[in-house]
Length: 360
Image (cartoon, one colour):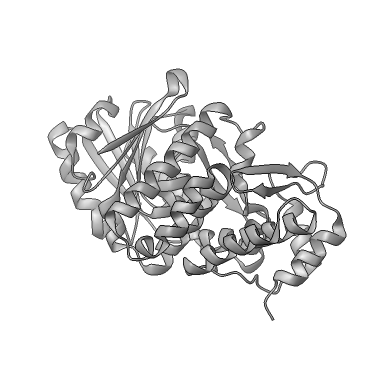
């Protein structure tokens, strides 16, 4: 097992990475202090790992309840969030009740938001079961739900007690979900570590094959990078915004099509192509680097052509973005691998990028 620490003073916590961790009682015991635990999962993950987690918690002698939510990004909303609150209130959960998020990014985001809100804050543990959630969404304390007008626009910064990333859970991932996770791995290398990006280029086929050693390295390095960024800028006052490379375009794709039509990682993969194109148009990035990025995104079986929503629709959606200021869109662009900038862009350059990126 590998441990990566997120250094946030009194709120520091470990990310534990390894195979078959969900069944290890000793990993959960130090982080559960109250008498009760509520597992939040979904209808896909509970049959796979719910019993393993419940068996791991049994020796602790806690009162364990499980909330099984519907699966998918389309359910990341107020209605589904209230199902968690209904269960907590129905079980008379108190301030020491620990929530455990067992699932992918949707479950992690909603469980974290519920933990931040219930009784104004109860502890929670992330147990991410998808590659995307292991390398990105479970780390850093961003929690929330979607609104029809914008993705993740309602939420809170709220850090978990621990992240337990079981690489073994990735064996049951559908190929499409695995590819979606690789988008965030590629993003991390592109924005923060040129050597890691080269490693991804060299090992993308091993990652596609779900080879354990390659996956463990990808998760470890991605978490190390994200942990260092979060420690430096927990609430996205500056540096942390670089983690949104590809997300301004990607979130517009998700909202424009309807949440769940494209997976988050698919939209981010395509969004990175669009952001790289804009980077070239504005003279920040050379064409050779853009071609390398597009090649590795294609090799990970991610889309590189955006859906047809219309340029004006894309622009409207991108204005409803957490980085936007006074209605002006801000983009995370590449200068070279490992080096980014946050900037506005002329409307004509954005429209040309949209015209060039949208599929016919």
